[in-house]
Amino acid sequence: MIERVAYLSMHTSPLLQPGTGDAGGMNVYVDQLARAIASRGIEADVFTRRHDSLLPPMVEVAPGYRVFHIDAGPASPLEVPAMARHVRRFASGALAVMAQRPPDVVHSHYWLSGWAGLLAKRRLQVPLANSFHTLGRVKDRNRRADDPPESLLRIAAEHEVIEGAECVVASTPDEAADLIEHYGADPTSLCVSPPGVDHRVFHPGSMASARSRLGLGPGPLVLFAGRIQPLKGVDVVIEAFPHIAATHPDLHLLIVGGPSGRRGEPELDRLRERAYEVDGLGRIRFLDPVPHGLIADLYRAADVVMVPSRTESFGLVAAEAQACGTPVVAAAVGGLGHVVLDGETGRLVGGWDPLDHAKAVLEVLGRSRESNEMAEAAVRFAKRFSWDATARKLLELYRDSLEHAPVASLREKSG
Image 1 (tube, one colour):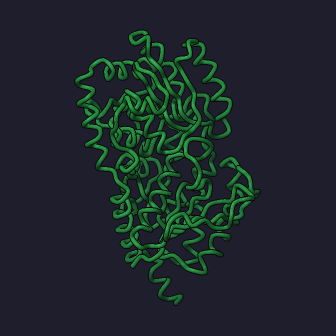
Image 2 (tube, rainbow, N blue to C red):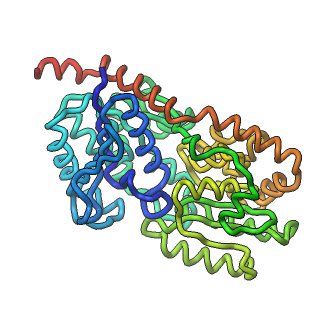
Image 3 (cartoon, one colour):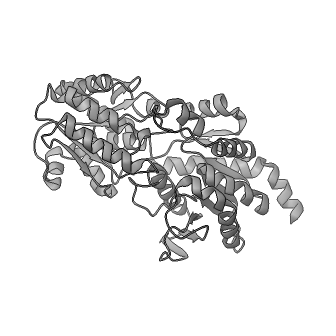
């Protein structure tokens, strides 16, 4: 019986605003999963690294859902590579809290937390589940030429976590295939469970009303929402803009997100400069990250959402946009092929040629009747993703791990 789950999210907190720094879809995932688990009467404790000295030791987010801030390194933002040296201290701090009320299962997120999760598993003698969210080897396959490769430390840690976890959670069958192909993962340890969408927030609504609330005018509107880094392909969006605007001179492009990672700031500066070069008329606007309620209105206001990522284990932006009735033009990589139905809820584009992405956007913009059908299909399809279904599936995986994991017998012996 599962009564308590410990979630490890060392490098980023579920309390942070997604869209900048290291806060993105994983933050939403951990937060929404913890809420869904707690709503079932199971305690969900999330452990994250303290990144601000003013943060309290613990925050009770909702009944049964708590976030613990663990001291591990300086109480200030750190780049992910710099956090690696603090993993053991993070694990020790989390274990000190867990010792008071030991969890039945540990579920770690990302490779750093997975590393800490292995330490927690061995100390507590409980099963470990891990979700990577992104994989180093897969990122290296598709990275932009000027983007540096992932560290050997990360790759080695990912192999170690895959070998040591009772359950490696993949968001889609594509991610499971990547784990087998690029890491030699044992298929029997892989569990496929897609993330969800909060349909109370992300649902269809009036485009005109959304634009009015946001102060946006008429005309075609293309939206990009996500962190600003080479991996997300914002450069593809900007280079596609003049090709789309040649047919739709009243086109506007909104880029919503903040810089992420060590290359985030220079990438944002470069993109702003390039946006002025390809437009110069103020039709391309950059906006800071916004709360979920506002991003849902932005999805409703847009005619098309572009997701030209170079890799995505799932693609939460694509799922949320479709839930709002907005077609998506996405790169045909990773989980995006599972989230977007090509020709039905949007378009999938092979590669990152801006002209190819522009043609796909023009196809959606140019056929109003088919676009309406596409929007309706997008809403229907997005309903398959729910946090309740995600929580239900993961609880089954936790119980299965508890019943069959070798650590179960070790726990009995140690008791």
